[in-house]
Image (cartoon, rainbow, N blue to C red; front, side, top):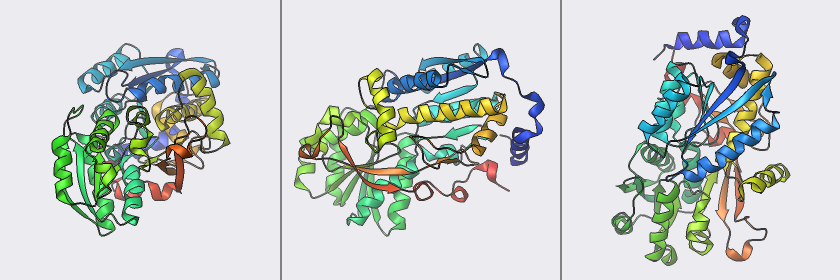
Length: 402
């Protein structure tokens, strides 16, 4: 791990002292999109590839006359497989960027590799706030959302409604542990208590034990610190057990992906709240871009997909402005350039790699409230970026240490 002083020198070089090196290597801009296309987070990868293609086309397919090339790989939520892809993309294709990654352990491993090999790592499908904390990197960018923002928005709303005791059902890997830790911090900061937790493996098939333990705890709220199909299946089984209908305990999914509506149905999850970085029907800008995405994908985009497009367009602008694909030069320019698009209004890229922007607390509409097809949520609150994301000083990023 490089010392903070070396990183600061890199920032200075990127800011202009290294302008003599302003060239685009190999006469191409190469993007390595590594995501899940076949496992529990597959909905992230499918749409991310489409969004990346849209960004490349909208930028004209080139930067300063150099072709933009997209290389796509499926990691299937397997860290070893992801790292084989990472090594291949670096050693045989000399990519400039690792994009998406979709999975905490995978993102951590790829960010470490990217740091060691001078590759920019842009995380759009991964949530864990550790990426800008203990695992931060001078070449790492966390663009879309994180566990701090997810927990803060959804948990704070439940606390305001009287949920002052909690029980967690948590996926047993780094993402779940980080999400539970970030949520616990919010609960305790507001005077609430955590009564216990039940772990489960990734891709679990049966949540009956965890749900029974949560029910027996007497907690006012049951938080699901998981994502994708794990969360969907746990909520479905809770609904089948009547836990949603009896109203004795509030069910709080800390990340509710768009597939929940298709897999569970609106009756089962109506009224549930979730925090997101983007909602396709928020305003005219989001609707206009989402209509184009939907025409290609056949479904509405999620925050991950909008984030891929936004991050790549900002990256291309930085390469164009500097005339270089040197990662330190480019990331310095990305911090300098304003971020204003349909995804992020008045966003900014911090020194720890966190892109700060507004988040949105959503609530699943009742079936009778749904108008336009696919408009299943209503925006309860816009959470300002400075409130939504962890303060820079609290993250523990080692590169920012004195």
